[in-house]
Length: 200
Image (cartoon, rainbow, N blue to C red; front, top):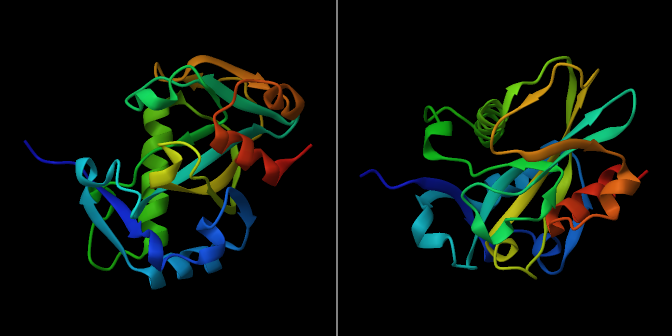
């Protein structure tokens, strides 16, 4: 059986400002990817680092928003990460796997983009009318077991209309919520942090 390998970075090599506290740090895409490239990313067996806080697994975390109503896609957590079950999330995210890096010429941005496209394809049966995809910043927290071994790269995917959007089976109790409605829910901490980038 082939072991799953995921992209990660040694915590001590990352910028201190990113990991010293629970935070949502707005920044330009180029600065973020350059910092991770400089830190030196690698692929390691997921089972080896899943509970090892010496490493931060890099997770693209995509917020989907309808432009017209400014409502956000949200769902109840299920899937393979049992530590997040029953929390509400407004982020679509997943590990960056070895298969997302197709060749030695791939840079980090290409690998991350390929991972995001794969994850969105897996989570949505249909996701039409995409208008834009923009990078917002980095989120980090060490308050939960999941957060202590992951670092989030937050993206905002805007769609023209939610009409025709068909979620996959992993997105349980899928619905569209305003920012105010989400803030009152039992959100996973990453969603709370990511919403700081799109407040109001």
